[in-house]
Image 1 (cartoon, rainbow, N blue to C red):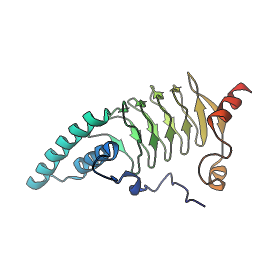
Image 2 (cartoon, rainbow, N blue to C red):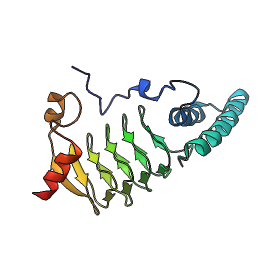
Image 3 (cartoon, one colour):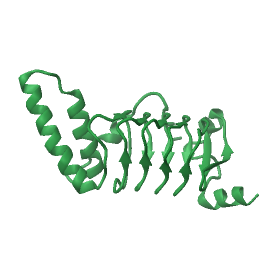
Amino acid sequence: MPQEISATEPDWTREQPRGFWDPSRRLLKSIREYQSAGSGPLDRLRRKLAVVRHRFWSIVSGADIPLNCRIGGGLQMPHPNGVVIHPGASVGVNCLLLQQVTLVNGVTLGGNVDIGAGAKIIRPVTIGDYARIGANAVVLENIPAGAVAVGIPAQVARTSTLSDRRESSGPIPGESPTDWAATLAE
């Protein structure tokens, strides 16, 4: 049985570059290097190098993630193209952001939140731990922990308890795009 992904403890292996050409992970690495640099003379050089790397990987990946943003460990962006994160947004640990996701100022993502391609969170809201936001959803209000939200504007299609998540080895049991459509049709 695969190990559950934590909503509180970052899994740093998710951010480790798997080769030279790994734009999203290289972009995250440049942000981490910039944020971890101290204030000494050698650290200033490290920061400048991190800025150059950040600019390069931002162009290559097509993502707009500022150096001063608050990102928890273990973030995954398999396709970082078009991902926009405002510096005032906060991303929890072990989150998954697919392409074209937008997070505006004041957004707070809990731990292990999955956000589908093209989703926009355009108001200062809180998304609870283990929540899932469907592709192209437009989130305008808070989403509780363990909920699945879909649509324009996003509405909670179903909720699950954290014990339901622990019993499954990954996704909510029986969850697929077809199930989401069936849930919405009910």
